[in-house]
Amino acid sequence: MFSQKTLWGSLIALVLLAGASSVAFAEMPAHSSEQTSQFQRIEQPLGLKVGVAIAGFALIGIELWWFLLYKSSES
Image (cartoon, rainbow, N blue to C red):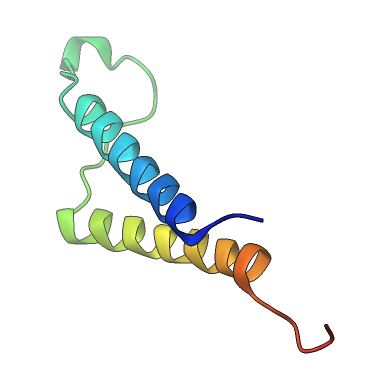
């Protein structure tokens, strides 16, 4: 169905695109005069952000492996 080379290429492209978009989003300035709503921005530690991202990518990888690469013993 899918070759392993195609799958890995797609995953790497996804990681690169997600990384590029998050860097652009992180550089957006937040002015205190614009924050007129009841919610306030809470800055999270970098380690927590990285850990959540790694856990998310691991879960996506497990799902892709399960549905695309796992061979059941019934066949």
